[in-house]
Image (cartoon, rainbow over all chains, first blue to last red; front, side, top):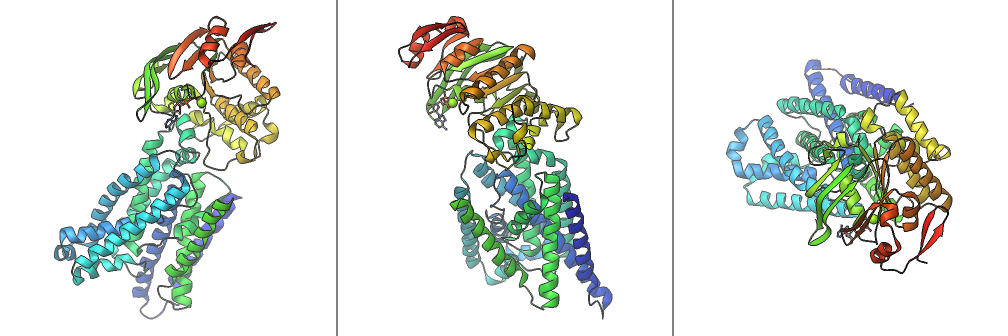
Length: 314
Length: 251
Ligand SMILES: Nc1ncnc2c1ncn2[C@@H]1O[C@H](COP(=O)(O)OP(=O)(O)O)[C@@H](O)[C@H]1O
Ligand SMILES: [Mg+2]
């Protein structure tokens, strides 16, 4: 049953990818094909990274509402990148290859998120609404710090980071894409290897410790993976707040199982499918550039409100 | 044997446990009794490593909590805490199957499945196995968690107030099962009980705890007397004889 759904989703992703690549391919064929392939890989990597990161975060924070984006991870990445521009200086920054900038920011990001979020999650019995509040405050804080710093620096430096601040599925730097793909693959392989541990961690810290799982170590490791995945998606297309929530909610519905092996694969497929189909519809069929992220935010935001309110009144 | 050596525990500036030293003998039922807030759960959670042990040492059959990895310990002790929280929404049979995790690491073989079935039968859960945990009554949940701990097949079983939500019938049935486990399977069971009469009737060994200090410890018939209970709970007690041992009347 679950396997049939998995197979269907896989087939759907392959079909929509082929459609994305070959539909209306004419003119300077090779050039367009190459462009589209890059875009396709970006969409699949980002969709997968956001979705897998969300499932992981929900597992280690024992809820199904919060996502890394809602907790301010994306905003933190952008803040760190802005800070880095200030520290390194705009002139030097412009000389650095995108991939180096990406690796540098990612390294700092992993450290910073471990510091902030592990502390937050470690305390037992944090209520969900406290976490939501903290997430909202973190997000606000990071974003306002970012715009504060951007006001201080000169306009040319500002232009350099502006592109990372809004989600856009435009073309991306090739080296960054390759590095992102590699990191994404390594992360998912690693997570897959300890997926049965995630199954136990989903029961909560108390149970997991009783059953012999070193909860804190695995929580830390998972946080590292989550921040890397956030780095990938934010660096490639920018922040998309509610994609993860949409995908994870659907994943739990479809999977019909609590096994992380299945949850992770299904969320990956769904996330990739969302973006590939969405981009095909909005950019190709409707010719509406950059509408996809707005639509995702709209529906995801509604879902978030619904989930929070339902939880509240139940 | 569980050896508790000079264990102290603080929360903030409050001393919850002070220099607790005790030995809990293997094979049999040990009852921990004491008034509310005495530190019974804290002690059990320290032994079950739910709470980090900072001060002093605890050894389970010679393995110190400080130097034994948590997955090795999961093969030695199983704990059913006082208010177990389960984060995900799972079915009873899935919950009990997780009890096999320390052995199977997620891949259940036929033997594991047999144990899970046996656990459900033993604790009267077969009819409930397809229900979700949040669809059970307090007592049924309690039994499900105990069945899960049983499936873990450890020598030591730690239970924090397992009788709390149980009616007379199920309380009795549970104590019978535990006694059987101790006698037939040589299990060692440590349980917090707040009703001293259950302790008097069913336990082999008894530890009295008050204000984080041990007041008495020893064979139940020796240490659980009207006098010690009066001192521990600050109530008047008279002893009634019964064919099955003493009853401490405090009503
Ligand atoms: N998180 C906490 N913060 C402060 N005090 C606590 C906390 N948890 C327990 N205590 C205190 O520790 C003492 C022992 O608690 P506990 O071991 O649960 O007692 P009991 O013997 O009833 O199981 C109590 O006085 C309780 O108030
Ligand atoms: Mg207690």
